[in-house]
Length: 246
Length: 106
Image (cartoon, rainbow over all chains, first blue to last red):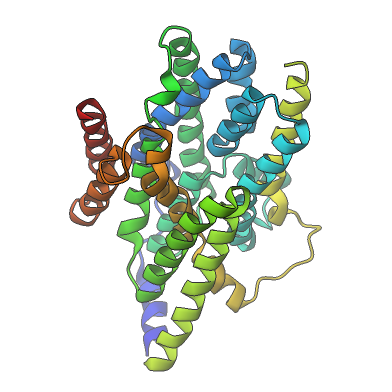
């Protein structure tokens, strides 16, 4: 019954909107999230100057690496004169969540050209993934145009804010103690809570949050990835139960 | 830092590889329905694992107590706002402003 209804809904859905409309929609959707990472980008830029990078090097990090959390961690390690090995392993641990994102998009982009796949991969961030998934749920279709244009908007704002940080970092002392990282917490809260629409998602959020606190205290390096897996597993197991209950 | 360029190239390769890995045609791997369902919890779990430590452990980086920490208070206020207000921009804007105000007060 439910399946036939979904099929009808899909068939009667209006034909796909034009690319221009999709680009506009993507920009509107990602903009609040992109603006919210401005403080984080500023932090990244100014911290890079503080640990002794040249303005060009600082900007190149955002242009090429384009990963806020990994960049901040690497800069902290550089500041503490840590080894390349520790820098690379922390980059990998923090970026490993993107493996999961690419696994989610896999079935939708696998048949695309190499260029398109590289392009989507390069612009794949937490925020781009979140809005593209929301778009996918709403329109029942993966849109490469949507994914890339939201990614590009995010990329531009991230780099402009890094640039601002590079300039500001040379003039504002102790910018890293202003608590700019709160901006990222606020953004993620604003993304997560409206998406809690079922008991299983609620359980995955609660379990991931609780384990993140405990793990951050005892084994900081792997806290993010282990807590994520615990959250996913709890959501998965709850969902099973919900199905059998019904 | 002399090793900067190595670090930059290395990090670029690592972050890109993680994002590209499953897009590769040479990775022989089919996603079953169970895995797909497991993956559907990726976003809420990861994002929560990132914001929770900032909100609940943020006081460690400042001189505030846990209960008066701007990270905690503003974080909880943002949670309430996110449940009440539809506009993401408004939620984030109000959340950050609250944090800023608290930071000035304490």
